[in-house]
Image (tube, rainbow, N blue to C red; front, side, top):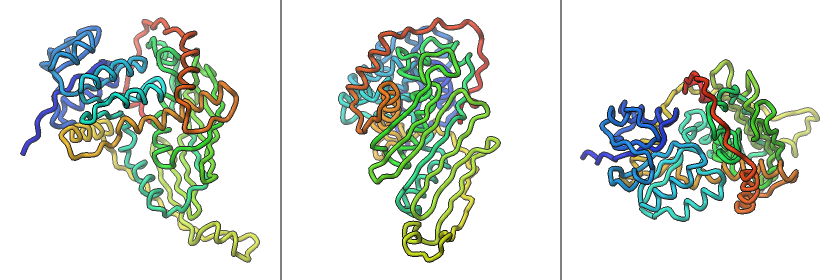
Length: 387
């Protein structure tokens, strides 16, 4: 039996929204029809899609022409739009992050009706390599995790990226920079696979590479409840950048690295526990025997379409969300903690005091202004934006 077509309203018509629209119109997203668009200017796209055009999100939400909305607006408006849609009982797909802070996300979850699907576009959870890494860790074959390390400096952004936007890389408009925009995906994958640390000490650099007020580089030290340690390094100012993710366990390790644009995944398994070998060997310079395996995958998927299809199926019932909105809180907590640690020059414990962080962010935002957008025409290739 065929399923009912979900009527979708898209709020915001920027670069990422266009990709979502293309996924729907091409059939990559099934059982979904765009019935309304919202943007300040009518570009004629609504007529092309046989949809209604609105200039105010509240009018679209109140129109009765949609069952669900996809919110792809600048971050500073995520909270207000999602709040209004949830209060009206609509299903919501929200582009990352869930808000300017995890406090905003928590407030949204408080008002979500029980029968409403509220998802976040954490599309990298569908990346075949990261799915495989999670399967390996969850299987226990690596033993207890002892150390984690992700250097992700492959998010290079030239000045024009910031100049053509009035909200990007401002405390007022985005609530941060590298951490809450580019690296929010990496932080989500990091905690999704390795868990949430209990302490973070971070060193953010603000405007090191660009004429912006927020962070464009971070080096953070993580501690976990089991005494495991971790390091996270991110940057939008390095070219060429590095993308290397290592997870070290008591029985082996797994290593992801990007070389010449291709991801390589290596698994190393010891013939016995490192701790057992250390305690019992009589070889002064001995090491456990290790077996190396290349478990790389060249499978390519349409990550955004997978998340949207899953969302549509969840609305129909019986399907669990890959990225429920509440899952967006952990990565934002980590990003917020890294900023707070830098501002206060001290270690931050998790769970994060979200209200305290919001107070600190409000202080930053009160002294922040949206920039005047440059009139220069930027060349946009969305495929080049993903790492």
